Amino acid sequence: MKKRIVYILTSLSLILLMPSLVYPQHDLSLYNLSHIPQRINQNPAFIPEKDYFGIPLLSGIHLANANPFSYNDILVKGNNDSTSIEIGNLINKISKNDHIRLYTDLDLLSFGFKIDHGRYYLNFSLRERISQDIFIPENLCYLMWNGNAAPEIFAKQVNVSPRVNASVYAEYGLTFSGYALEKKLTYGVRLKYLAGRFNITTNKSVFEIFTDSNDYRILLKSDIEVQTSGIDDLDTYLDQKIGSLLFPGNHGFGIDLGLNYQINENINVNASVLDLGFIKWRTRNLSLVSEEPGKEFEFEGYKLKDFINFLNDFDSTGKDLSDSISDYLKIDNVYDVKYKSNLPVRFNIGGTYTLNDQHHFNLLINGISWNHEFIPALSLSYYYNLKRFLGLMVSYNIFNRQYTNFGGGISINGGPIHLYIVSDNIPGLIFYKGTNNTSIQFGLNIFLDWKEKKVFGEFN
Image (tube, rainbow, N blue to C red; front, side, top):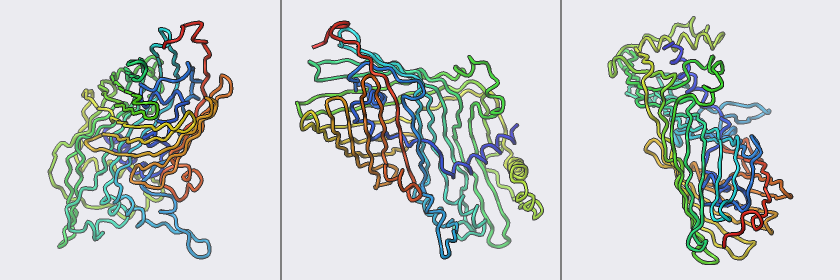
């Protein structure tokens, strides 16, 4: 089992170099599209104009791609329509952005309605969420492409170990929002129960390699501590009872906070802090720990016939290779050790200048804090509102060290049916081969016309 887990983690590190269909969740354009009720997830003080019911599985769908490199960075066309693989470009891109931080949400169920004559607002949501932070050292790329004789790592003590922190969990959220100061101030609090499904937490990630310049011996040294939950028996995960699948026993809690203040008829400011919380992992846990951390040993290499077998049968030989590495590193497996992981915390600070009922100009400063690092983002946008029937937005967004992201969104109300489509990088959808990030999110809601004045009355 230990060797199987090492193989899974080794394969995962390689697979994550490929494009992933997940969303780099800054949600910059969505934040200021006031017709969309789902933006309450970005700030619980953003009270929707109408009561609504999100169509299950269709109220919030995010599809996107995010990588340090693009298709054109790797595959370059030459003469006679030939195509070559430019590994140098790949390594150069990774050296400039050696983290892939990916986030995604899927709304399974959501609805919201006003209470107490419109004075307060309640919202419930059930979301499946994924967050992961992958560190890919450029030295690993040099080793994989050029071998241990690469000038960047030859005769140097270098760490080639990737680092993965990832969580998959269900979020049950209940939001309470309200008005104050004669409706100039709105506030919101979302309390969340988190049901953890899968997790990888890397506490220590040291795998150093040194090639002696005199006799070309390869010396290895490791200090590894990886905690996992739910990944050691993926083949049987779906064989569990329905209750265990819905509530796996890994309990967590979180809170979102938001404020929205109308300074005058033209200027509005707002702020939110999201995902303050944690998950305690208690079930199906397995930790991988170096038995002799820091001890140096000599690696004898890989035989030619084994390499030929590797070309013929990647899966089988890959397992053999990972087994060999596991034996050298002397990684011990420890079961049922409970541990805790924190959520990546998100911040939003925004402002809106309203020219009139139709024209709105927005500024948003966004950031994500995770693993002792802060990832900032910035958005400038213009929003056009047509009598609560049509909303149009164009935006310029800076995130993930990328400065050519032009986004936009549209929100359409057709009777009780509400449709929205949003992207933080529209050119990336069109010229997808030349971009390293694309995004599109869309959804369908049903607006509920409760006739507040007759049923609840109207809060003034």
